[in-house]
Image 1 (tube, rainbow, N blue to C red):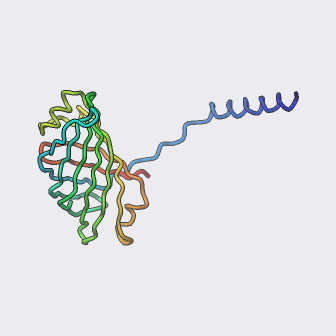
Image 2: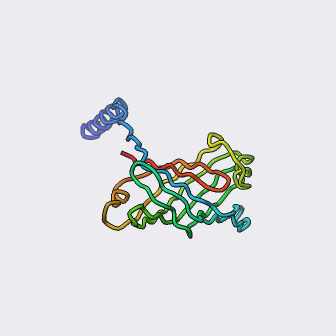
Image 3: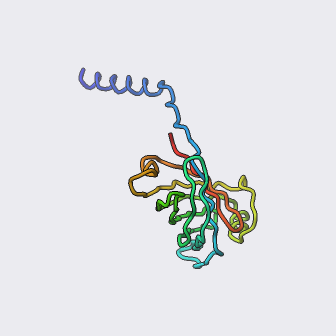
Length: 175
């Protein structure tokens, strides 16, 4: 009986301590570069399992920022699945070419949330204020060892801004 009671008290002590523990410090974000990907008109696949599917090809673009400069290579794209509530799942896969010639593979999944009206305006390629929607991604980079392998040793988050003919992806390293 004493063993059971002691175990109960030990559990209460742990619970009490964790409830009073200070909140851990959040990691900082550090801006590293912006990708401006030029886009071709969307290719609509239609409705599949109740979701609107589309593909948007990337025709090129630029990369500029404090940690990386270069270009976006043509040939990649963004696969989107849009539900009726205005949630868009994005899965982008493309390549960058750094100013020194290094090729960097990018896989960039994310989500865009907007009202049905804003979602339709974005889908039609209209200009929409970036404050009217939530667009975040978690890019991952694959690159050979060398001056850009820091991209493989960090976690990144990004904010997307959709424009009529391009998308801007502002990349932040999680410190």
